[in-house]
Image 1: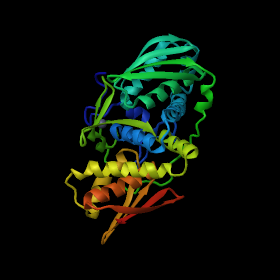
Image 2: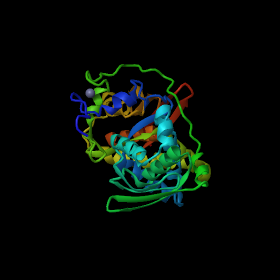
Image 3: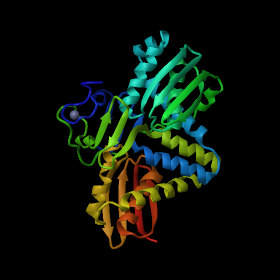
Image 4: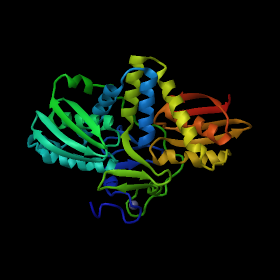
Length: 351
Ligand SMILES: [Zn+2]
């Protein structure tokens, strides 16, 4: 993968061609503005899934695989649109999958290898260092369905960081692919501009992430944690699905779990509870595609934050209130309002 990183900012040149980073806090796949993506912390995401499963008391693996498969199916449909897609599908060979697996390296998903392939019937392989095995399984199932134009059911196992998978064509899986995806287009333009890399044009702030393309890894240099680029609608459709089946408390659980994690993560950091301190802390939201912070106000013990184009209401509220607790060393209560124009107002104060 030599020569594939920008010589100025070290971001893969792949993104210059394939991704749009907007200053309004959104990033999306070029050619499909509704396919918005976010850079998520893998450990936090895994923690959130494990704890959510404990709280709701039933397995959620299938729901995760389903949500990710539906989003991956749509993503690959976009990637394979036009003559390339026609060619790929008409003469589908293992090479089509290898080409797609190369993209997984840029997104931080790990290294995918294929060991067996029968056109329209079966695909087998391994993933070294999968970012989240349940989501990776969804990616593979969604990709198979898109390439073969036939749904498949996936089985997978993980041992010592190595995931093995096999997928067989199965019409029943078609139902799973029809998870409710709600594509969104950002509605609020940016309020301030980005400083961009003079060579490749991505926001210069992306240099906070380091890509290891040989191993399919992305690290956040500031937190030393692994990250991955994930479709926003995966997260949304997963939470919607769980909420519909398990009850309205699901988003509250997500918020509580995230809030506790943010507080723990930030407690060790040396941060100051001023409006400027919060602004600096929340600035990373934009380059991660999570929204643009439009205002931070502190009046006495009350903190008010507005975020335009938020990627997930519970996650953003949890980030702000978790930060408030960490910086002030007190318990807090929060309220919020989502405006139909596309912004989220959050108020946090002592409990
Ligand atoms: Zn660059």
